[in-house]
Image (cartoon, rainbow, N blue to C red):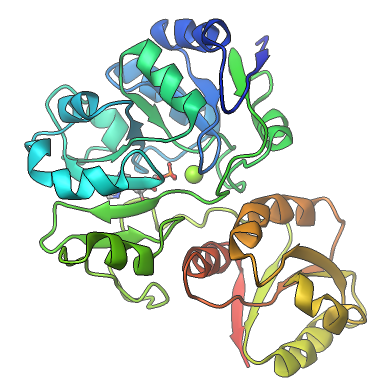
Length: 342
Ligand code: AMP
Ligand code: MG
């Protein structure tokens, strides 16, 4: 398949350029578009065949539900059976933005999109390109991340081209995404609502923003919490074993030394600890501890790089689980083949 690659301005996208992607969406094709979290692979959510093509292009298991992307509250209302205005205290504060809310689906949404569930995740992206594309299309767009299944979500143009070039008819490129991690997911079909996936908007920010709206925040590191559908899949894994070490820096360096000896090893670490690991393994620096959003933005790119470094083993240090750090550690734990606590 020939892929039309269209470069668009991330802040002021050209309507004519984005319309090309829209015409493919209308024809039932899947297209790649940027969002503020990661790049998405989107298709008409109301067309079951179009939705099926997303699963096919990615090689995504059919029991892993998709999120629906909308560009207005009216469009969100069309996708769900609850009265959306009853949730205005939440939607006023969280939308548009990197937060997905789970509702009961409306009859119009095909079960192929929700993997047979009667609930559906709705996301109202803030990214100008995503918003314009969905607005021009006038239909909700079902979209998972635009990577091949099993690979880290794409956060940079090169990731998208690496995975989906010649597999889709159209790719909109607009540079790096903003957060680099998938959306925060809150399930509103449970009372009180439950945080299903940590993301760019942290539990601390949710508590602060929503003050009197209680949200159950399960201990994400607790392996016994019931998993959301699709979360049983180990996403994001690099092609080499990744060992995540948790503990004090001195102990982590010691453990990393043991793991790395006599093999070609790399270690994911922060700027501040680069020196401490320099004699142990090849440092792959994610960013400074003072700028955790930078660490988040660089994580998936770094995981992809590990696969290209011809390594025997990859190691990662841990990051503080506060703010966006909780989402960083959630994704790192999923990518890891083993977690060692020292
Ligand atoms: P992504 O992989 O970023 O496309 O996000 C999709 C993930 O959202 C799925 O793997 C599920 O874990 C979660 N999800 C989607 N729809 C639902 C739903 N109806 N109920 C609960 N979780 C959902
Ligand atoms: Mg994904």
